[in-house]
Structures are given as C-alpha cells and as structure tokens.
Amino acid sequence: MHYKQEFKLLTFYKFVDIKDPQEEMRKHYSFCYDIGMKGRVYIGEEGISATMTCSMGQYQAYKYFLAQNPYFNDIDHIEKKWTSVDGHKFDKMIVKYRKEIVALGETVTEEEVKQALQEISMEELKDIIDNEKEGYAILDMRNTYEYKLGHFKGAEPAGTINFRDVDDMFESYKQKYMNKKVIMYCTGGIRCEKLNVLCKKKWLDNFYALKDGVIGYTNKFGDGNWLGSLYTFDGVISTRVNPDEKHTTIGVCIYTGHHTDNTENCRYSPCNARIIARKKNYKQHAWFCSQECYDNAKKDGRVKNDFSFDSTDYKALRSLVKRGEITTEELCVRTAKGIDKVLEVQGFNHKKSQKEDIVDQEMIKSCMT
Image (cartoon, rainbow, N blue to C red; front, top):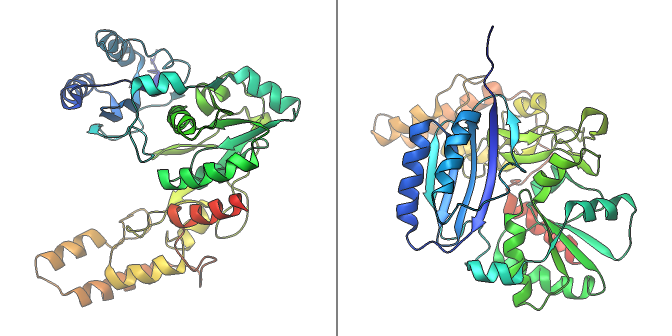
C-alpha cells in the first residue's frame, strides 16, 4: 500500500522586539534546512514573517522548535491559516533579514502593536456581508493585482504600496469614512496589524483589522463571500479558496478581457509585473505585459529564460557579453530574433508597463476622487 505524505503551507507572523535578528536568523535557517523545510522567512527587529511548506512530521518538529524559543513560543494562529498542498512549493529554504517584516515605511514595536490593535472577528465580517449591513466600509489593503484577482464582496481597493501612499490615502479617508466603521483586511493579517498602529498615529480610531486575514476567513467559511481567487506567493500564485459550487472568477485577462484565475509575471526582468492572463494568450504575447516591455527587451536583452516554449538562452547571451565574446549590439540582435520567433500576435492591449507601482498609482488616484 502506497503512503501519500501530507504537506502543509504555513503562513504566519508575529510582531515582537528581537534584540539580535542575525542570531535568530542563523538558528532558524539551521533548523529548517536540516529537517528539509522549504520557503521564505523574514526576521528583523520588528519580528518574524514566514511562508513555508513542510510535511506533517517536519511541522511537528518545527512546532517544538518554536516552543523552545521565547520570541516565538506563543504564535497561536499557524494551524488556523495553514493550507493543504501536494508537496513543497519552494525550491529551497531562505531566511533573510528585513528591517520591516511588512514594508510600510517605518518600524513599529511590539508594544505599539498591542496598544493600537483593533480587530473584528471573522464571524462579525460574515454577518456584515451576509446581511449587507450599513455603516461599514471594507477596505482591501493588499496591492492592486491581488484585489483584481479576488476580494470580499463590497470591498474597495486601497492600492497600497508604501507608507507615502498610505499617508495620503488616510488623509482622504478621514473625510470619506468619518461616519463609518472601516474594516481593513489583507492575506494573513500582518499588514493590517501594522496599519492599525499608523492609523492610531493619525487619530483614526474607526479602523479595524480582520483577525487572521483572508486565509483565516476562507479556511473557516467557504461561503462565497470571497469573490475570485487568492493571490498567495510565487509558485502557487492563484489559489481557489471556496468550494467549486461557491467559486466565482473575477480576474480579467489583460490581453483579451476574458475571465481567468491564472496569474503570471512579465518576462522583461526590470518590469516583472504580476499580471492576470490566460496561459494561451500569455504565451502568444511571448510573456510580455506591454508593448513597452517587448520593445525594451529587444533593446537591452534583459529577458527571463523559459525553455518550455522558447529555446533561446538569453541568460547565456548576456554572459557572452560580459566575457567580451559578443557585443551588446549582437546581444540585442539575437534577443530580438528569439523574441520575434515566439511572438504569435501583433500588438499589445497595453502600451506601457503594467508594473504594480504604475497601476497602483492610477488606482489610488481613482480611490481619492
């Protein structure tokens, strides 16, 4: 009898004041690497943020490891937000330092988070959506591409990128939502916990964070109140979180306008935009999000390899330039030839790059008007 091993995707965080992040990074990497876990862990003075995959045996060992650490021994939401997967979804184990475990432009302390945190439960949000209660505003605090792929019914996009944008938006929200209770949500809850601190500093007392985030809600309620799919991470980018009978697809292909749950990345390295696109049309456009990226790629050769449909080794060509074996001009000629060989259509719907900061700025402007 063949035994199929069970794997879990873990997503968790904790705001905690860490005196020596480098030492915690060393211990974390050594343990996780040794037992075969794979994923990404960020540790800094603010605390820890992690997304990893592991077998159940590895999880039990990791749970014991966390229990022995005074910084991380009371993280109680890991099992609430884990997801079943069919194996490892990362190539390796990475543990990195981050001054901010969620980047919003300034660091916060453990005490600031505790003092500022205002939460709303999953049950309360469900009641608000189910009964279309008035007096509430639901704000999606993730990035624009995530909102377009999936969001709660009635939610508005914040289009948040950095602290400057958050600062500007909150000024407009003071007027827009002064008489409403504002519910913020993000994938796992980490961004909204930190945003609560920033809200308090701006005297915004009517902003509440959804406890355990989207993952916590959709793990408990497969009720269709979440529309579309959930953007998770590179490797398993688009994840269905509702049962099939409750699932709706709201993502729109940037090439055709047809609905799809599929997400990709622009092939031009300086752009790397996260885009919603049907696989067939993505391939037809040689994996570029816009005319600008396609044109720029032919000018500088900064193209990501994908041997599944394009036999040209662009990385190797760039290496030849570095070694002086071919000129930059020859690189561009060969790159253009390779790209044109696999391009199956003429023209792009979007003339300019669909990189997040460009798209999000347009979203932010629309939200403020």
